[in-house]
Image (cartoon, rainbow, N blue to C red; front, side, top):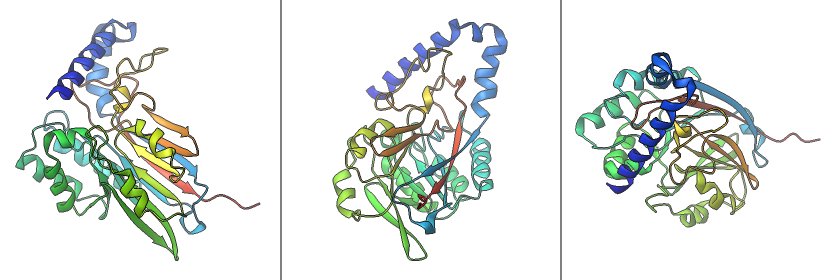
Length: 288
């Protein structure tokens, strides 16, 4: 489809940029970027103080994964199984997946593999869909989410409770495909209490932050660019992933965190942009 073809052409330009940088001169750089770094998962740990977080949720640990891009080509069952094991080793209180379970061509075989591998994650893992999920089969991915025992948070709000206190986790369906209904989410979200939003495309943060209701948005989509060159950054970034492509940002009163993803789209190359699992420890504000 047009969007996917455009993305492919952009990433071919990225590969050309990589080829001419001195860091990629010779077979060593090529082997590293195609064989080593793409499978070298980095676990990012950070602590974030959310102004509206109650003491009962102080120390609550969220693990975020994104952009699995299960294609049975680069992202194989073994690689996905290893990533799931890494997530479970972190012993998070809650796991969230911020879209793009798949790249294209949804099949029964891919559905079965995804359900088998992802079912090893904690039950009631939260998930939203990404643009590739819609291009492949939104209904197929929703079936995966259901059969894995997860919760589809597309345009929904979920309440976590601890000792009578609440933390709200919300999600929007894919923004690229204009499936988001932030108005519905806002209507169903109580006026008070810490709230986290899952949205596949990170640049949606400008819209969500404008509500002054979310403390944190978690996204993926950009893969961090897959390639980041010294002094130049990422040569190619997708639409809706250009302003907040990787890492932590402050957008108004809201934090935005963009995960670099676990999978890739072609060309299968990563440089200075390792795949990522994010573990966020939430902190309640201290009273002086």
